[in-house]
Structure formats: structure tokens, C-alpha cells
Image (cartoon, rainbow, N blue to C red; front, top):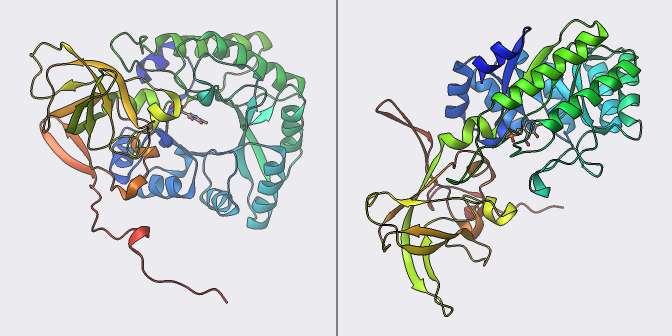
Length: 388
Ligand SMILES: Cc1ncc(COP(=O)(O)O)c(C=O)c1O
């Protein structure tokens, strides 16, 4: 992606990893070593980014409802940009920066009002989106005017994020053009442009290509054209992929337990995980494939429904996948499991979360230790604090 960007865009570029896809101290250290930036959305992610060695000027704080503590921490750290998400937050942040005696660098998240072709839960730029300052009704314009007039905020750039698991470049072109029209109408030349992340990856063999070249080319061309025809100096371009970086790096391994035939003739294999470690199928009917680790060459001639062990009918990982005869003890591998799985994991049914291992060139590290039922968790606490 970095090479693509350097070829496509003649000015400064930065890749910023969206930590929400998957983050832990061990993983954050690997990313910091690559020299990329990081987009965080909480105090927890911010603290891990700092501990992992990300410099302040490599960090952006996003979020549609940042707390006072989160904003104050980002102001104190002088992060590269705090991404203002509403007019209300703009005033709140201004007050916090003023009290800290700082001028906070901000981007405004503009909601261009367009719908991308992805699951509705992954769309973020439509008219009713909870994210950003809407462009259509003038809030984004007002946001720009207010930041430009502020003593405590410095407008560094404009940001948008259209959604996730997107495979078409056209919406990026349209949205960037809209953002720059807006900037021009307010007499503002953004020094930084961040068109967010969102580029998709295939989860199944018949999924669409994940080549990022069309995305990067579309973004770079549009920025160059739009700035060029206005005679503006080119901005720094910041791309924010999450899924594209993490998803294909991950492979989930499950052990098969119970198998059974349902009354309608279906064959079901239950694994020792499910919606608690991977909520994506239940959340947005995400599709996956799987194979049996120890029988890669056996004919896959049986349609199997892969379900989890949690007490929900929706706890189904794959509605149907062709596998060899499957039985208790088999290890099932589900590829493309690195993004938005363990970062959204829960302890439903008081299930401990699995370990995450990093495998590289024959080496193995534990990025995230396995939780065990004996660990001390919220559900093992016996101390009761009486509130007077
Ligand atoms: C502001 C912002 N940037 C980047 C991303 C990363 O998106 P993706 O993982 O689809 O690249 C997200 C995801 O929700 C986001 O909200």
C-alpha cells in the first residue's frame, strides 16, 4: 500500500492503521516499528499506542462521543489531529484546549451524505449517520468557520470515512470532490486530507479482489485534480486502513466438539468458540470459509454448518461449507480472521477469550495471552462496595 501511494501521489503520504480492527500492545509494537501512524478511538487505544512507541504526531483521535478525559489526554499529548465529530464537540474541545493553554490541531469529520455498497451497519457517510458533521445542512461549513475563528483550535485538515468493506472507488472520488468544494466555499485550503479507510478484503474464495491500487489511484488522482484546478499546494494525504492491514493476517483455529444431524437433514459441527470471539456473522451476516487443518487433501464432500458453543441461535459462524468427514477433535481453520473479531470479542457465557499468536519466519510470539476461567475478571469479584 505504501508503494502504491508513493507511486500515485507526488506529495507527503501517511498510512495510519485503524486500531479498532485489532489492537494489543504486542501488535501495536509491530505496527509502530513499520513507521506507520495509528487512528485511535478511546483512552485505552491511546494509551496502548503510546506504550507501543507511536510518537504523538503519528496519532489521530477519532470517535463520535469522546469523553472529556479522552479529549484532555489527546490535547495534553499534542496528537497530530483530534477529529472533531460534531459542532457540540467542537465547543467542548475548544474549552478543554483553552483550559490547558494549548492550540489543539483538529480535522473536521465531514459526512458527505452518500451511501456506499456495503452492509448498512458498515455505512457511515449517509444522511442519518451518527458520525461526523453533515455537509448537506451546513453544519460542516459552520464547523470550518468556527475552527478558523478559534484561538484554541487549529484546522489542519478535513476527514471523511465512508464505511467499511468497500470495493468501489467511485464514492471516494465523489466524496473528496464534495469536501474540497466545501473547503473552497469557506475560503479554506486544507493542509491535510484524510479520506478514511474502508477498502475491502475477500473473505471467501469467490470474494472480490482486495487489490488496493484502484482505491489509492482514485483518491490520489482526485486530490491532485481538485487541488490542481484550484491552484492550491497539494496536501499531506493520510489513508486509514484497518481491515485491509489486519484481516488477512489472521487465521482463527477452533476445535470441533459436538456434531449432529438436525431434523431437516442438515449436518452441524459445533466449535469451541463462536459469536463471543467472532461476532461478525451475527452482526452483519459476514461470510467465511473454513478447512480442516489435518485433512487438507481429503475430498470435501459434506456440507457442514459451523456453529459456536454460545446460547444463541444466531451463534452460527458459517451457514454451509464443504468439508471432509468432520468429527470431535478436528481442528478447523477460518482464514481472514484478523480484523473486527477479537477486537469486538466478549465474555458471553463467561467464556474466556482465546490467545493470539504471531507467526513470522519460523518464530512464534504470544501477542495476547489466552484468558482462563481462573483469571481474575469482573465476574469473579466478590467485593461489594456499599454506596451510602
Ligand atoms: C474513522 C475511521 N477510519 C478508518 C476506519 C477503518 O476502516 P476499515 O477497517 O474498513 O479500513 C474506520 C472504521 O470504522 C473508521 O471509523
